[in-house]
Image (cartoon, rainbow, N blue to C red):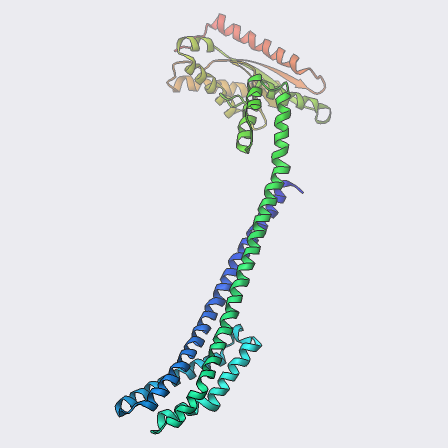
Length: 399
């Protein structure tokens, strides 16, 4: 499986697991909210049952008529509230009440209320002499309140169990996320980072690498992709002009020619030399010399096609590789590049003129030549033009 597909799958799994955690928490929160409302309702029912017993005792002992009426009114209110809570619990479809023990306990409480306690409390409210009834309530109320309390504890324990299950499910999913993340890291390290580290070690020994860059690679501990990218960039590209270095560029060109039997290549090489660079460096300074080089090469990079590329052969010498075109078309492209130099020389206020000598040769499959021979021929043609500009035209690049 390709690394990108593997990473896509593992990242997809991580997203799914994260969504599962969110959904579980939303579902658990909704259930806990409903359970909390049910527990509160049962808790109120427990409080009402206890308060009704206390009020019954106070009513039986009260001698003041007005106070007794107020206590009876309070008892009636508590009775109504108790019945309301009990009825809501009986009609509830909560999962907490579907447990057999919880359901049986609630039915028993409802039955005891209807058959015994409701009528006794009503008698306490409606009758004047209620000492005997109060004694009956006192003899049974403790067990009734204990039953109600047991019911509240049962549903509280069930609700707590749900919270524990949700916590365990979250923990399991988090563990899965950590496992998938570690697997993804290990897989990436195995299939990407380690091969790249091995490649770095092999590159250190290659003759294509400059000694200075090789020394840097030997003296650092490359542990991050960013660092590797920087050093690959330094190996492959000239840092001033951002074109291929001599060794990387010629290696690319040699590999291209090595595949000629299958591809039947046809391309042109243009060897160029920036005129007057030494004069600019001596008179204006190396900063202007670098600016001259960059200005000249930027024009070339903007005018050539995507398949073409530039190689820096030396300080002021470059090689342009024109893919799949003959020397005549390459000359036409060069004329366009040279015209752009003239526009810049007129329009831009630079202390120097951009002047570049060139020589173009053509490579054909039917008449294959060695790369070195082709470059030498292009260099010779370039030198002829450079000599003409220097001796006949006597060009001066300093404005």
